[in-house]
Length: 117
Image (cartoon, rainbow, N blue to C red):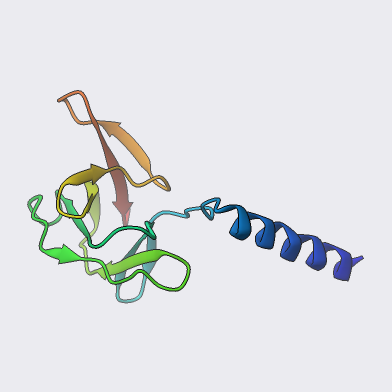
């Protein structure tokens, strides 16, 4: 039974990879070094993250893409509630598809991450 489940999981992964479907985006994760922010953007030339934790500056560049099209960064962010967006190719501001979002008060949305209590 377990081998059948594993074979089905591998088959689903292969079908999604071949058809070009995006893998599931898990959103930010708390790690020992800080908060891990991943983004699937295989066609991007650059990806930055800007938010209330860095005064909405685009200086924090993600590394990537890796062989799966994933860009990522780990930022040491103190406890608190923060809003943020990814900035693709220096011009496209994008919410994190793996995180909650809130109205930004200007007709758009910001992603939200809560760290700590």
